[in-house]
Amino acid sequence: MRAVANSSVLINLSTIGQLNLLKEKFPQGILVPKAVWEEVVIEGKGQPGAKEVTLAKWINVQEVTDRALVSLLLGEMDAGEAEAITLCREKGIGVVLLDEKDARRAAQRLGLKILGTVGILIWAKRVGIISDLKEQLDNLQTKGKFHLGEKVYEEALHAVGEPL
Image (cartoon, rainbow, N blue to C red):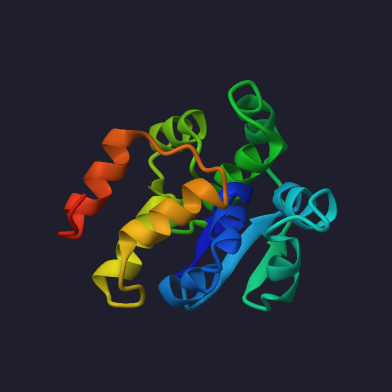
């Protein structure tokens, strides 16, 4: 299975040293549109994710061709999110990796399956790749400055049977 990723998931997982979870979950690789590559690797040079994404041979850049859909989506989200959603549709890929609410809503309206950073961590805990979800969520919030609502935090821990 493959997925298309937006910047936030790549950066957040890199920040906590867990980017390789994407390779485990999606062994056929991750596609990123050009806008995401530029945001993470070019504009983000020296920031979390830039080096990790550059070195990950299983992450491939793809051009988006449906510029009309990208333009339409740009009213609701940034270029990386718009291109990630569009690329997912164009390539018929099963999952788009997004964290931002507006982008997730738009992807959902288009019938795409969505998975975010927290969802990847929940999966990793369930399959035994990580042993402590709470530790990873806490790292995400402290190291990555990831805003995680209390309800989502509690639901994630509950989903894997970890205490608060």
